[in-house]
Length: 212
Image 1 (spheres, rainbow, N blue to C red):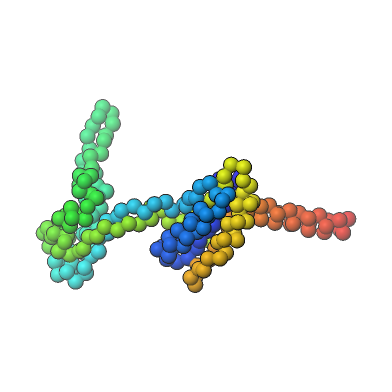
Image 2 (image 1 turned 180 degrees about the vertical axis):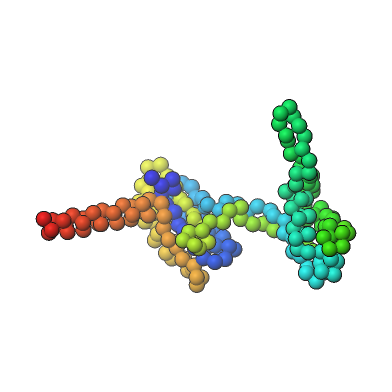
């Protein structure tokens, strides 16, 4: 059985547009009296540091994109630089920025990039810009398209089918931009698949009756 009885899948190319449409669908579902709770499968947006390399300045300083990527990865994710022995175990020792320094753009701008061409250190802010953005923690695809799924749970005593009928009627009133469309999951999709299998079985049975 479906974990969430009513699921609205919003598919299209742009993440921000899908987010906006998802908020509209969430608002529509919340207004339905039979709705108890509304969720989506992307989750809340999380802060993320973005490093944009200026190719002209980087080339002038003898720094490559790989140099910047390596320095950024070392600072944010860390890199094993040695090992410590604990009895029979070897424990990796990672070098990276302190937790408070990994979450601010100003701290990352002060990072030094080692040039693989000149073997000299170059300040990151001299060859790149660092900005703080908010991004989806998880992006989901359905049938090769970016898809945000909004789910609704019925209140105790309410039938999922009644909630689905109300949701489909209200969601169908939304105007979607070109290139975006809605499909339905949850129990509706499962029932459609089950009925499809039943129809196939009936057709096969009729054919066998005529062949006997």
